[in-house]
Amino acid sequence: AQTVTQSQPEMSVQEAETVTLSCTYDTSESDYYLFWYKQPPSRQMILVIRQEAYKQQNATENRFSVNFQKAAKSFSLKISDSQLGDAAMYFCAYRRRSGNTPLVFGKGTRLSVIA
Amino acid sequence: ETGVTQSPTHLIKTRGQQVTLRCSSQSGHNTVSWYQQALGQGPQFIFQYYREEENGRGNFPPRFSGLQFPNYSSELNVNALELDDSALYLCASSLTSGIGDEQFFGPGTRLTVL
Image (spheres, rainbow over the protein chains, first blue to last red):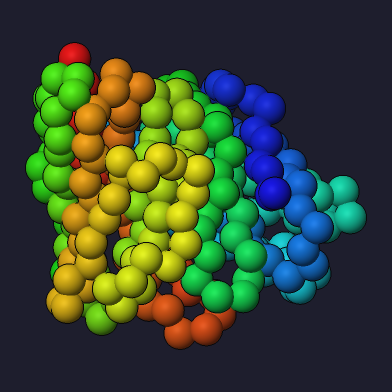
């Protein structure tokens, strides 16, 4: 069974600074997706960034980028120029690529942004 | 294009009762997945419905059941509620087209069992 581990229950960052959230996963599959989701107090799960395992290039979405290390099964999220609106729970998630398979989530990291 | 909606927003029930939660999928989507998110945890997969049939189930007992309707909206039913069923219930809709189907989440229903 696939598992996703987020070892940082809480992180904080100063506004305008950079923060990195860690995630490791375990799978025997070779073709899969990895995701970072943001869940603000409104509870709506919002997709931040997606990485396809067969792509070596790290995904980037504006201030958000990932460091995908397939051999190490590591998938960290870097948030640059942190903003107050980035404060939320962040979940790392895994999904097999074939078919519409369910997401496997980590336990989350609560990010606080300090003004 | 309407997003995923869920009702009700909050619900309080007592142990032993039954509850029905509802989810309207995003326009054009044919698949709904349900997740349970306990306090301080990540979401856990309950089951998925595709074209009105259950299409995968997580490690949840049979008292968790569901339906999907011809318009692809869905219900999650939980019988004989237990205290541990208190959680945020999320539904996610997607278009099953083969590979890489992104799931779009609703705002969730917060269930409290007393």
